[in-house]
Image 1 (tube, rainbow, N blue to C red):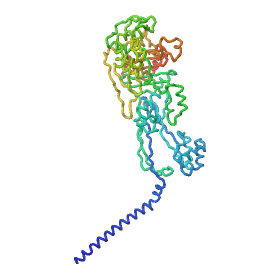
Image 2: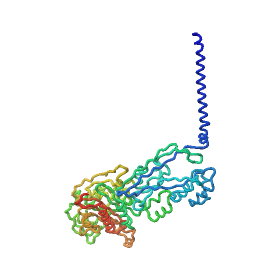
Image 3: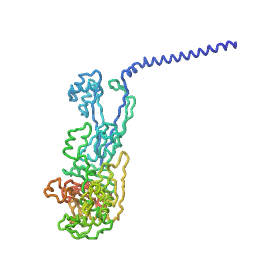
Image 4: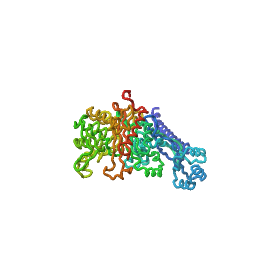
Length: 592
């Protein structure tokens, strides 16, 4: 018995082995049946040209909104029409499509046959046309309508230099960051905050057949919309100033000296940023560039101008700080003085006589500041102007001009010439080689108003849910009395009997300012040229208010506005009246 049991053991093992093999073969047969019979149609469709396509999903770009809640850069839907090519192109479908789109049938048919792919045949199609296409969906089975958000600027000219514009990537630097053909911010807020405004792309994985027709969505990663930007700019103020400038070319900057926030920044001439949105209207762009040279330049940050007499308060502050003069000292100011072999005259015939620093700023005496400059020396002058932010960028945008504060070393490097005393006396009255931007002037006057704090000017107050705090770049350490003396002198410019800025006077509002005439040609030029507008001097008026509790700085520059700052002063008065109306200015005894 025992031997029989042992003899049956191999037979049992062989039986189990055969059973396992039979089961394995059965499973293979079942799987083959499933793949080749049950899933036959599915795999046949894949084998006949179906592919998986990865489609980019563009995010909605963040909005740009003013401080008073107006959208100045938003998005609106745009409709693009595509045709999906197949081997059998129905001529009747092409005829119907061309009639709806208003296109030539023959040209459209030739275009579709030549591309043999999904092709864009119409951009920015109006909604009425899209509704007609949808009404013929069955007949237009090869037509696809793609809806995408498109940038839109509802207030193009008054806000063009604030928002900036969008365009396709085309520089080598941009190609390192973005893909070819991508739309990016080119200037201003659109450029500086592009990575926050643009959001994050999404992707959709879809299965399409050989003709490009979608079979089904396999997976999707949704895009993330860009962050909204809230500006420090007030919409009402910005638009008012733009209209008030009328046909003048130039710029107005309104700044809060307590934190560096820009309340308005108008530059004229301006442009329509909508013209750069694809498809680009080249003919209108060419017309714009022909009629207004440099129209894309924001004059507040890119315009370089001799500052003229608006520089004098900083020279006075430097001399007071150095102890070269005090506020009681009087200086004899005749009509002219000789510096080297050249005679330098004042603008006032007969001269000013014995005057102190208050009267010198009130009446804008050139001789007083010539004499002051000679006592100070160019190195001291440059040192103090640099402390007030001249000769370097303000920090708003990378594209700002830093201007020129000349020195003997600068002149030697640029011209190969020697520095003369005549260069010094030209510098102290804001002429000669000296060049500044209006934004630099606004930041510097803010420092006079707030006691010496240089803020980084800010144009965006919040980004998404994040508030952007004020940034102090540095402090000018001076005796408070220096700022008080200069402020009092500037008060007299607007409120004094002999003030050159009396046209800006508003009852009860203690505006402190300084007029400036910025020559574009020498005083020695022939008189006949001075009657030509392009040779007329630029008109400046730089100011803050009220005197004892400064809440705003207004800097106005009118190109070729004429001597004495008249044009700039009258415009600035209108700006202050609007600021009072909007509640940006409050009396000294009122709480802010």
